Image (cartoon, rainbow, N blue to C red; front, side):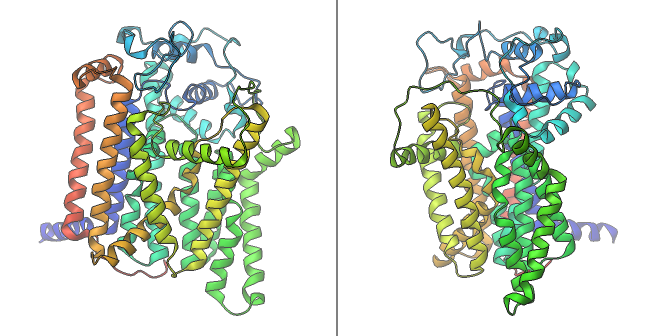
Length: 541
């Protein structure tokens, strides 16, 4: 009798939305861990500086002012052991689109033997100020404090450097995977009132290889993505299910936490009062004087508490340095001609499109260009369709407002930097990952509308999105692997052999991780195809 009850409970769980969200999270975690394993050491954006700041903080080095600290000798030693540099200059990955004629190729290096891969503690030769500037102290120390605590508790300073770096990469992967899919699900379910749309949205991150790549790196972007995703889920719950004290308190705490991660999180602040106003307008109705004052008081309370919890860091920057985020060093002037606004906009759109979907640490790899174009078109079309729905128009306007603010600030800051330095810096699509939840919501809603017009039942949408996302994920991983390890016309066997020479983990461990990912993918396909994606309306929660 008890066995039958357990079996029935198991079947109910497998058919529930909880199972879909858990599987989406595990898939994202697995894909991110595969990137963490495959990507050569210190090849993710600014990974050298991120690792350096974590190690320095874990070893009691504190959080100096911007420009006042340099890369430690142990981090530079690990950089050399990873093959990222050879005799001084950076080595060039096989998939790089262009490289100086005299540049050392990563594919030509002999992997450092396992016995010579020292720990960060062994590489430490005492205080030294000879390395380049570590500009990460221009950011708040929140992410680095948490990562440093994990590093210290695990005793990773005594591990081989490559496994210590993997631990920090895995921490980012866990942070993103534990938050993004569930936040996409909650936000989409709240906005649409349909479980199937929420389930579909949970799998949208599988369509963004760059998100998985970033989640498999040592970076404060992971903490920013997690915190802003949680903020979006709470905002949509407030607008659709109503403001409560607990929801407003949770929003303030999450926004305060986001303020401790990175400046890109601040771009969401203008939308918070608007979202709270929507929630009070729907909950109380009537004239503005009935819902306006409590909405204003709630917005002031949320932003005030968020300021106390973390926003004060940025205000202190303004007082001390005269700007929100001070520069840690001067960017040397470039040689690019000054572009007009229209010309820069074209470059901006191209660079952001590329680096949002598949930068992968290799400058404009041609083999992935068409994939990024196809994904960009797909997202623009389906997100536009999802935004055009007449249901909950105010929430859709909130997403447009937030997207306009984030993109506008990114464009304006990048163009100002271009006019000042004649460089093309700051054109990073990953800065838009603070919008991953509203993008997933719009994408899932758009897919539902298009499929509905074609007569396709809602219950098949999560399965279709999962299959498409899995194809893109595996394609991105496969192409990324070849970009890192296959030189010229090298065979897959040669690329695998080169990878195993540099890998932090032996072949059985890598096979185990790949097999686990495949098993979760198979389980997900079985659960979704068994009818887990039933479309059922939900009410306020």
